[in-house]
Image 1 (cartoon, rainbow, N blue to C red):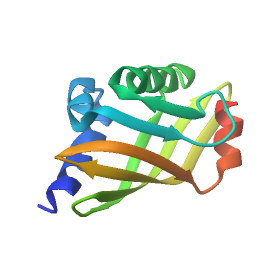
Image 2: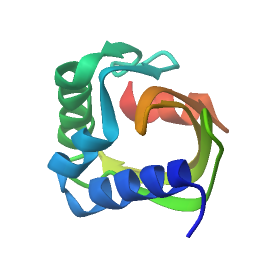
Image 3: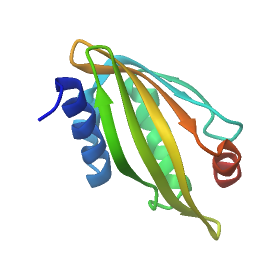
Length: 129
């Protein structure tokens, strides 16, 4: 067992992978701010659980349900967490396997803010363009 915030993030990613949105939402702070960078139809800032839920639903819909996250490592302390991932999906005959780092601000046992930094943002933009 690691730091409690490492365990929190691991629980959230495992829940997302199994489609357990109730647990995903329980990990997120009510006022979560979710930043999605790049230049594609998912780019933007999403505020609160309802907007994040909509964003995740759109991501799933655009990939025909094929989008999934492979977690390589999670490190966390009292206020920050980093999750190293490869995201996978298929869309319009394209296959994506792209590495990224998800950076989390953590507060009061919840995920309060998230940023994603893609190794190849152009690949994400092409896939979700």
